[in-house]
Length: 89
Image (cartoon, rainbow, N blue to C red; front, side, top):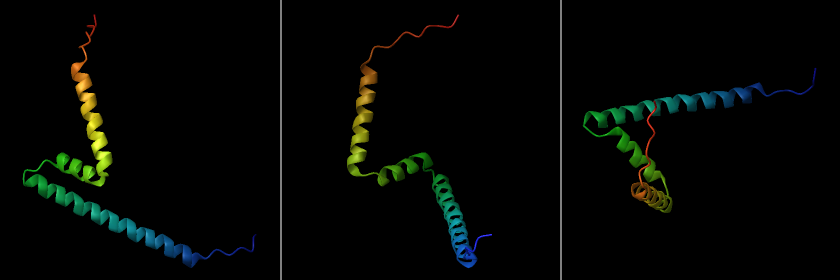
């Protein structure tokens, strides 16, 4: 067997800290669900709220580029001739 000692107390400290953080994250996620539920109860569209949160996290230039590409693709799709869909026999 090796003479290397493993600092069990230090390992326990890291594990317990991570476990505490996991517990806090679970509690925060529950609070987040409650806020979304409250917003839904007041008639707000939760999908739209989530989209707003996602957009607010983006850099303004990144958001502008995304919106420009989305607009470009939508216009290209609208102006393209419709393809005939072959009916399955």
